[in-house]
Length: 66
Image 1: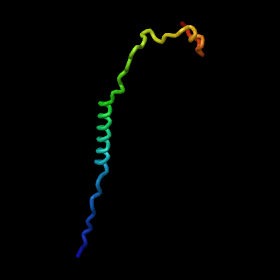
Image 2: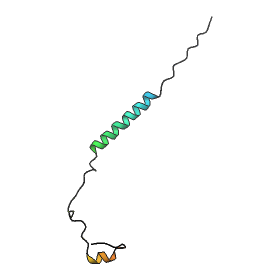
Image 3: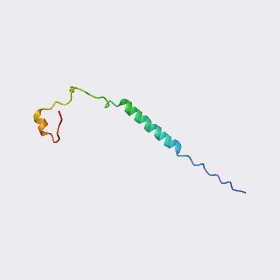
Image 4: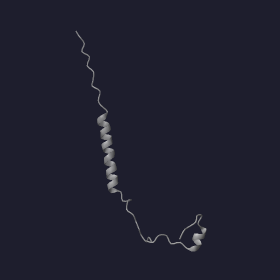
């Protein structure tokens, strides 16, 4: 009798890679939507800029044009 050699088909890795990519994108999207660290707290910021005294100007290591 003749032997019939049956080989199993090799499964592709691509579905697993796509699943991992999809899960990573989902986790990143949830993180970005729930992250509140991107808000800026302006508080009591002077509109004119930094207030500096004349003593502080003399201690600067570089010349300042006023």
